[in-house]
Length: 66
Image (cartoon, rainbow, N blue to C red; front, side, top):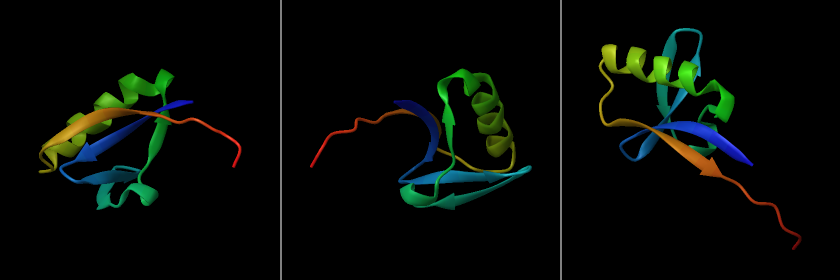
């Protein structure tokens, strides 16, 4: 499975409506790949709100039996 996430330095963005907050990985907002354009828009809006060091990352998740 592949998902998108917005990283900010060593933390991540959590999105709600038009608001953003920095959180740890386990609280970050994630998005399917087909929403790349919307994620890039969120990145641009977060930059305009003063966040820096932003980058969109692709998470690649695998599932395996234990």
